[in-house]
Image (spheres, rainbow, N blue to C red):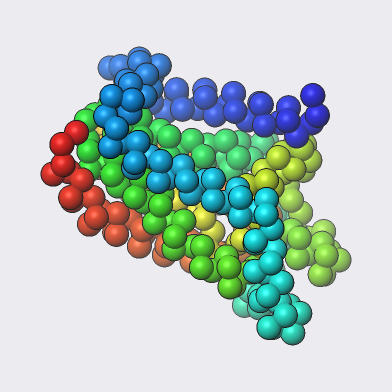
Length: 283
C-alpha cells in the first residue's frame, strides 16, 4: 500500500475513534455505536432528511470535482492574468509580515506538531459528523439544522473568495517566493504522505478566509445549543486548537484566520435564523 493511501487509512481509523469518543462525552447515557446506527436508521426511514444531508454531501462532491477538473487552477490563472501575473499572496504578506514565522520560531515542538496535526487533519472533518449524531440523538431538530446549514453557509461564503482572491498557503509562499524556510509545512515533520493525501480536498491557494477556522467557529457556537456543557467545552477546545493549528502548521496566514472568524460568526447567525423553520417541522 502506497504511503498516501496508508496515511488516509490511519486518518480514517482515528476519525472513527474520535467520533465515538466525542459522542460518548456528549451523550454518556447512550452507547456511541447505537447513536450512530439510530441516526442512520432515521435517515433511511425518513426520506426528507436525506435531502438535508445530501445537500451537504453534495458540497464535498463539488469541492472534490472542482479540484479534480482543475477549475480552481483555471480561476487562479484568470485572476493572475488580470493582475500582472500575480495572485494576492504577496499583498497579504505585506500586511502581516512575519507573524507566522514568529509563531513557528517560538513554538515549534514535535509533540505539539503531532497533536495539532491530529486536530487539523482528523478532528476537523469529524466535527460535522459528531454534531449530526449528537443533535439527532437528542431529538434537537433546530440544533441539527444549525449544524447542517452552518456547514453549507460556510462553504458558500468562502467560495467566492477562493475563486477571485487566491492566496497561497504560507509555507508555499516562503519556500517558492522568498526562498526561505522560516515557515515550513510542519505536517511533513510527521510524514509527507499526510499532506499528499490531504491535498486532494484542499487547493493550495484556497486560504482566504480560512475554512478550517470559519466552520470550527460555527460548530463550536452551535454545540452550546445542545444543553450539554461538557460537549460545548469539548468542541470549543478543539475548535480553538484547530484555529491555532492553521497558523502553527504553516498553512494559513493570520489574516486568513481573522477573516475566517468573521465568516464563522456570520454563518452561525444566519444558520440560527434559518433554522427556526426547521424546528417547527415534523421530525
